[in-house]
Amino acid sequence: MGHVNFLSFDCATKTLGWAVARVRAAPPTGEWRERIAAIRKAAGMAEGRPDILARLVAATQRLDDEVRKSIEVLDAECADLVPGRSDADVGAVERVKALNAYLGARVDPVIDAICEAHGKEDFMVLVEYQIGAHSHTIADAILSRYHDRDIRVVGPSLKNKIHFTPELAYRHFVPRYAQLYTANKAHTKKNVQYYAEKWEHELLLSMRAGKLGHVADSIMQVLGYLAYGNDRRDAF
Image (tube, rainbow, N blue to C red; front, top):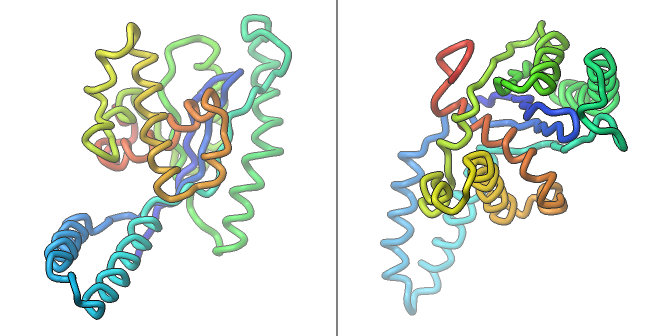
């Protein structure tokens, strides 16, 4: 089964969110739905039949393991590149130096360790398109640092097109918030919280809510890109 490795960034100086994720290239969602339907049908005949019940438990566990391994968040973090400093007080050169120092100390070793463990592996780098001057500087610096990899600039709306359950769809969040930015963040964070709780992802569950929101953007960006943008170099 083929997988695609991603290094995904939510660009900012005070809240740089990133995630390393491994995603199954072509998950058989149609087959999974058929198996779920079969399990539900068999469950209706399992009363008083421990043999059927045992087979259902085993089948459910196999399916659960397959789905779990289709989306694996291997590492993630939200970092303040200039602790104790205001974003507005940091110049462009210092901003880029702080970013590169952090990437070299924290992110690149993760990539190197994965490549060493599994043999040389390719990583697709996703960088969200930025409008603000400071975050745009961060995005451009990331593009430059990883220019020799398969790198994509991703539109900010793709991450909000994805949801894990119907109740977590983006349309349910917009009416609850006065600003779209807040609705966008709440949507990705709630979906990643669902993922973390469902699969008992200790790293994500341990993150403070404020930091998880930025990491969540980078994770949902991967899924949005796969679903809606993977046929273009710059996906919007």
